[in-house]
Length: 130
Image (cartoon, rainbow, N blue to C red):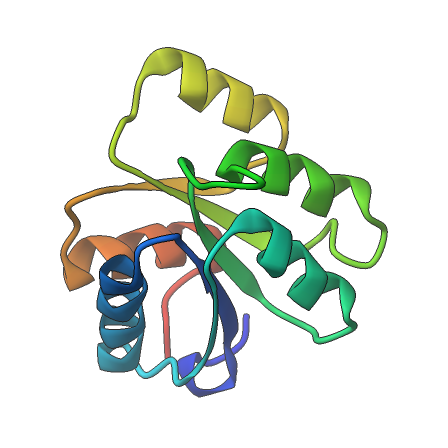
């Protein structure tokens, strides 16, 4: 488990405000190496560029390539298939949860969220943050 200071996170959301809130929450947790993408297509380009990320936090509902399609692409691509993936969504309906689980999502974060909830979701994937 990497320490918080060594985490590399890609935050994907079409809303700048949400990306800023996630970045701010990660900063409070000591995670400073945070990159952003405004949609799934840009996110996948960033991931496929060879940069090593520990975690993707992605919105579900986005233009070009939604979060579920991004998850599928990440899991299908050899270089990224082991990157942890947390789906950020305003809706946690059963169908979405089941489909995302089928494609290998590691956890969910429902909007609106708190820093404590963000930490809880990350720790459920990686163990206690240090």
